[in-house]
Length: 265
Ligand code: ADP
Image (cartoon, rainbow, N blue to C red; front, side, top):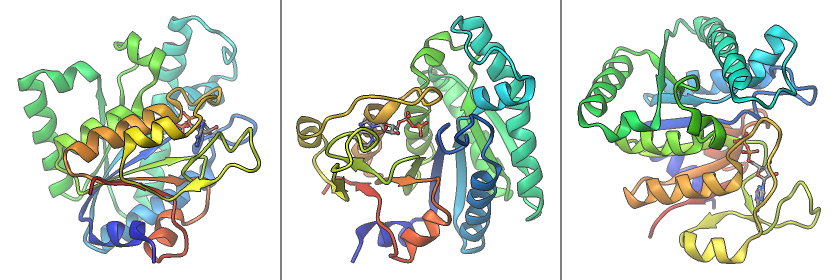
């Protein structure tokens, strides 16, 4: 019996964060197959009566895909330019794929500071509640052009956690390119073991090795564990799943796969 399955089935309000690794294929192009499949699963969740907010990375890769240059430029202004171009591409893909299910999407570009300001906080909340109540799926991303610090730490995992807390979500799902948290980086160690349940995050951090991140992923496993810590403090569980695997959310809900679930007992 997998706890993750019960948690998905019992949750009504779910924030799903999609990592840039999920949205890029091996050549660094946008992985449309993975994106379409996630949207199909979101549609099924909505049909089950659940409400969904998406926090999406991937603007950078979409920018490279669209303009086919600057991928190796390290300067921050070029990274921002790529995100600016790619954000449009990304939203066009979301709009097109959700339209197949007659679902509208609404874009919200936020910075971490927005969450610290009382009035902006209320505005974000009101906009989110209105969109979701009206059956629209909000797609949130960092406003990369105005948040230079964030572009450096690329912290959409934290943005996912902040969104989940602000919206009083029942669950945060982080989709990345690994099956969950391992005792060491599974990309470097074939014998790495998956940890399926985490109820003590501080203990976990003392026990595992976590390093290495992809060229597009900027948060790494540490910010995912940090996001879990944040939402768990509000009593919200977090699931880390492999978004590159077809039907992953559905399969976890049906108890066919597990991922890592973080919750406070
Ligand atoms: P995303 O783009 O999905 O946000 P990141 O590249 O930021 O993904 O972070 C996920 C990466 O963290 C994995 O691809 C993996 O290589 C790395 N990683 C490092 N240590 C671990 C670990 N102990 N367990 C799982 N993943 C790990």
